[in-house]
Amino acid sequence: MHARAICGPITQVRSRQTPVRIFRPKSIRRLILVGFALVAVPLVVALLFATFSVDRLVAQGQHALFEMVRATQSNQLLAETITDMERSARQYLVVGDPALLDVYREKHRQFADITRRLARINLSGLQHERLARLQQTELEISGVLDTVAHDAPEGDAAVQRFAELARVAKQMLLDNRRLVEREVARLEAAGGRVQQTMLMQALALVPAALIIAGFFAFLVTRPIRQLDQAIHRLGDGDFSRPAFITGPRDLEQLGERLDWMRTRLLEVEQEKARFLRHISHELKTPLTAVREGAELLGEEVVGSLNSQQREIAAILRDNSVQLQKLIEDLLDFNLASSRTSSLSIGEVALHELIESVLADHRMAILARQLTPEVSLQPVELAGDREKLRTLVDNLISNAIKFSPDEGRLVVSLFTDDGQAVVEVEDSGPGIPESERGRVFDAFFQGQSAANSHVRGTGLGLSIAREYAQAHGGSIEVVASGHPGARLRVRLPLEMEHAEVA
Image 1: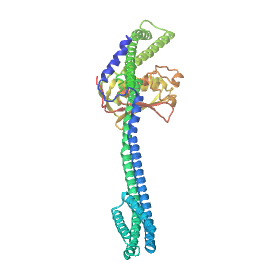
Image 2: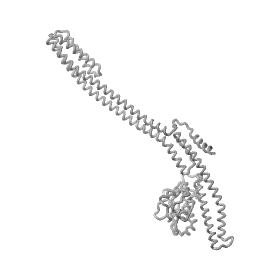
Image 3: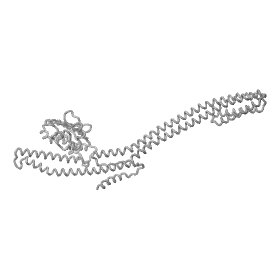
Image 4: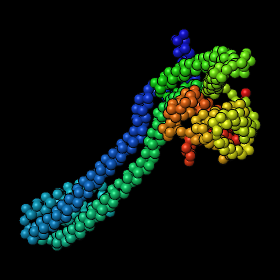
């Protein structure tokens, strides 16, 4: 039997979970890990791009710096070589020593090596033109010096052209410095572009990471929120809705077990309702006989009674009436707490209903010598007349029960913000602040009830709350400027959703 009870609801829950989903992790831990991984992906991509861009920029800067240093050194060496060549050539023309001509030729070879190295460097077009002019001019000078005598006038003319070579070399050195400045500016611009690209990536990837994080946070919190709602419904006694959890498999299994517990609680609730109905019915039959017998004795139908006998008959009758009221409270509570009970909706003149309930309690009010203070505005609303009557009756009987002799009984009715407001106030011991949250719980009897000679079931206010909530309203304990308790009921004038019997 238990195996069928367990498997039944779980099978039903699984049948509701048959839709195929693309992503369904087996555990919430795996879902969290996947979420962290996906959140980290755009951030890692941005980090890798930033690292690659910075490395490439650094490499470009290093290469450019190396080229500029080589070009600067070569230009300086070129200028020095031209100076040495001019000195050697002039000495040869004056002395005519062939060794000096050999020194010149060695400098010529150095000049050729330097110009070849410069030609391989990434120079500007103007620098290449000037380098080509230097090479051509130097070849012409060398050709003259190699073919004419040292004292020939052509040699003096050729040596005079070294000034032109020095001037061009100096211009190339200046051009190289300007090229360094332009290269630095280019690297700064490239760095700015990289920085702007990284900023744009951050503006795009950080929101993407936040969106992914928010999505996975929703996936994580949704089943937890569904579990919390299901537990709250069970705590409130609502067993009509199944505990359907969508999410990781371990939480879905927890939801299946929770739904199994819901079905078990529903069965227990139904068993409790059947027990209350049966026991109440079984008690009412002999109690009716006891009450009728006590009334016959009190009316002396079966014979005259002395004063002591009449007192005993009155005690029997009063206690049977009280016991009958307790049984009726149990039946009302069973009906009020049943989620399957329906409302018989109709137009109710609430002020007339309250006057009728006060008339029913007139003898109890006179017996306690209470001073009623009644202020009722004409109010009509849609509701179940019998349940509203039970609600008001419980409030007024509770106030009478706890009011001292010669106390006050204040009953008022008015409208506020589209709602009917019923307030009932007594002059009894009141409700302590610590008990106001529990006073509407079933079978709860506070400190004032424990110290009172009047005992009850502790169901009156619980029934009142159930009927108020069934009408879409509420009931609460409010502060009073006088000794005693003030209970306030708010009921909507029009019910939006009601199940009509």
